[in-house]
Image (cartoon, rainbow, N blue to C red; front, side, top):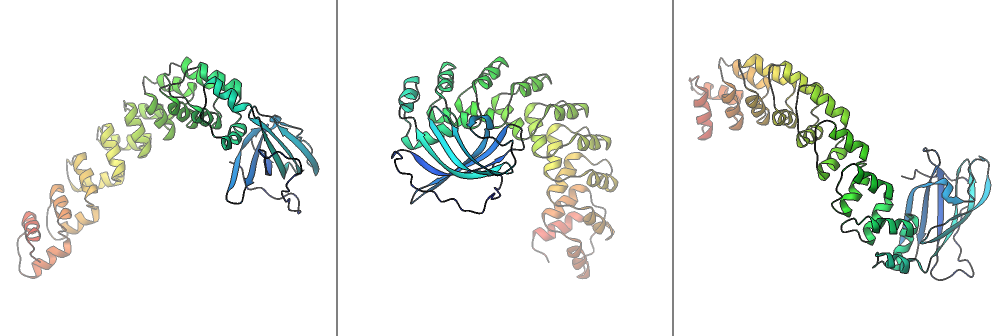
Length: 365
């Protein structure tokens, strides 16, 4: 994304209507800054009319701007041209310390949409031509995509794929990696979420066979090959959906190992449930200390129903010996230490926990 542009000169540039400019041209202002990535510039184009304002910002290859030279850090007047099949953008302005701003004129190629339609991409509104120019949807690119026969690929998706830096090599590399591109949306999602052929091969090398949607989900949730190695090294043989769930709920290799050290052979669903319900290793240790031979499912249930170790100790302080199942029942029905103490003060002498629960259920206060 284009970072905040620091003004490099004090004069405010006003966009003037240039005499002789054709009616279908677009005029506006530009601002640029050298990117942190070598050979790229971050550029924003602004244009407006009496009702709307449009802002287009992205990183460009600096070499695409003919006449732009940022090697000189001093103040300089510049003119550049950004040539596109959809039309050319010419700009004038000032740069200082490799950042600058100025005005531009965009002149659409009047024959562009006719040629695009002949390739098979029609139905585009004239005001959209600017987007095709900014994203560099060249006619060669369009022809190449048409030849690759992506299911459902239309003009909008052609633009969408190019706008996220999609190119022909990306399509070819995916297919070489054995991916069947299901439709244009699928292809765009692969590019947006950086599902690369290298990533696909690395995942398959782990004896996993994710489908296209799962590959996208793995990248969204940062299920990396290294993470897969760490989980498998912790002793868990997982499938793709388990790995995605692990990442979503922060099941780390360290957490998995700690649960294992506590004597539980938790499966993937149980590990995920432990994290969902905030069951920590310390909570597990505490429950093991209070309830001999406790099962992992009961510990999860206790956390779901907000049974704390403090609650257990408070009930034991009343000379009662509840099971964990009884503690869960007490929590469900709001049988608190204060409730038991109040009943005792009123003459209830039972030590039967189930009796206290029954009294609460029947409205005895």
